Length: 118
Image (cartoon, rainbow, N blue to C red; front, top):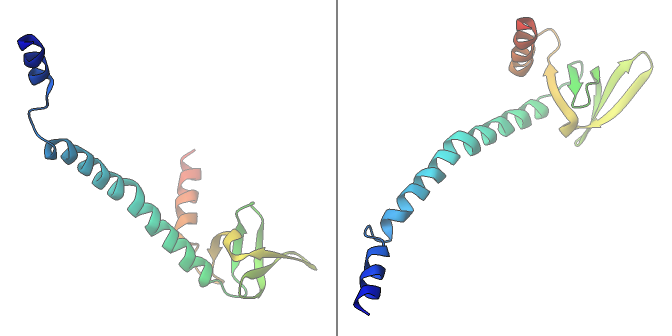
C-alpha cells in the first residue's frame, strides 16, 4: 500500500491549480491580439466604406462586377455596369469603392501593388 501512495504522490502536480491556467490565459490573449482584434478593425473599415458610398462612385462587387453607382436605397445600391443596364446589389455585396475623381480605397492600392510584383 505504501508503494501505491508514493506513486500517486509523485503523479500529483506540484504547481497547483493556478499554474495550469496561466499558459491558457496567455494563449487567449495572443489569439485576441493576433486574430480577433485585426478582424474587427477590418470589419469596421468595410462597414464605414459601404456607408460612405455615393452616387457616381466606381465600385467593384464581391463577384467582380465593376460599375458606377447610379442610385441608392437604405439596403441596396443600383450599379450601372453598361449603357442602359443597371443592377441592384445589397450594400454588403460591395467589395471596394473608388470615389469619383478620387484615389482608390487602400485595399485597391494593396491589390495593385501585389499585381505589379508578379
